[in-house]
Length: 464
Length: 98
Image 1 (cartoon, one colour):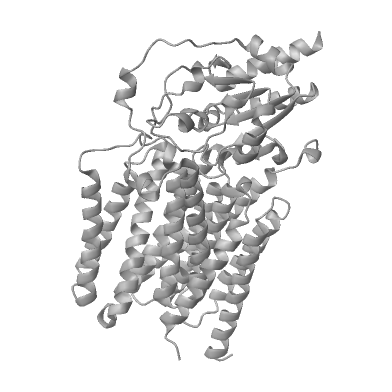
Image 2 (tube, chains in turn blue, yellow; image 1 turned 135 degrees about the vertical axis):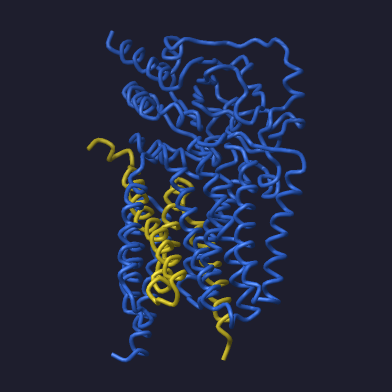
């Protein structure tokens, strides 16, 4: 076959792959068809990779095969991680995606450097800057999620000025390179500065803001892949990158809206520093606490229960005990649902996956709007490891840092029960007036142990 | 004849809009699998890495290309694998008892 014909055949296969990718995302719209979506994506990817081997430019296959084997050896365990590790796994895969995109850009620079056009240089520089900062940014995010790094925001004075100066330095170097591509020594400096910026960008961001950060990094990784498509003139990369980028972007917007905050505020606001003023104004307030036995009695006689899970449930690994509670209450005819706040947990959809893993049927998982419309008719709202997303101060207290954030209105339920280790304010350091309301019962203890105790009381009491 | 950049820009804008329309329809229930699936699809950069690695233009390009192939391919394999594992767990009430 002639080279031209082969090239056309390869391009044709890429077009089919892209069509399959689009179908893949389309089928993901509902849980019923979602697995077809994965299959379509797999076929598309396999087709694209296989036909690439027919590319006439290829002369040496040994390293490709070795690298593919290494990739599979790394990728398979990363595909088999426990569900609780999904946020950090996702951050790691952002890091790998960004690494691949920037390395390709870097090698394009060195291959073409004497005869690179100004325009080509801009494309490569943008691609490599975004790829590199997403690489280190994602690594820091993964480190925070794995708790290798402190989850609290790490801040110092003048931080934003330092960070933005570093980014500006990368841009200036890129502009110099555009005028003088022969100063090749500047290129690694630009890469280094971009890597540094990624670290500076994510280090000050607290764990509670991870859903937004991880979505934003997702969108950067997509953007770097699309830019790589511009650099290489590869339309398949442009499309895949644009799809990934728009997905990350939409998720970031949803996350920001769910916190009533802007991108700039998330990226540069260093949310979650302990409020000194609030701590000073602490007065003695009454708290009603209850034992597992009392809680079980109330739950057992309720008609409807809404569970509001948060990151604390994931940390305590309580989802399987919660499933037992679901079963024992179902036997008693109690209707139990789960109200999922968009930013509950550490990444978009985190709680849904954990509850699905514990075999909770997904029609029992309801979103914030539905939950709030049903809350007034709900007997018990049971809050497990969630804090800020249930804080009524977000609606009532204009001075609160989370004022305006949409919450799950558990204070509208007839009784609110909060499983919590202690009265310590949560991650963002914001006091929660819910805990001092008359209808609120505090259940002090470890989420997993406490839910286990309630289940024991309920199953023991049910037998007579 | 439009330049290669112009064509890429057309494709980018159209794919971006298509992406918005598709992703908007994804249920919030599936936002985590969405992210892992788009990660796996994005790993299609592996095809560019394969070409860089196998063109044999310079030792540096081959090494960088090989690392990029490994990084992107690990995303592809791991991303599809975990997405499918997650989606398998989503069940309706009626089918909860196996």
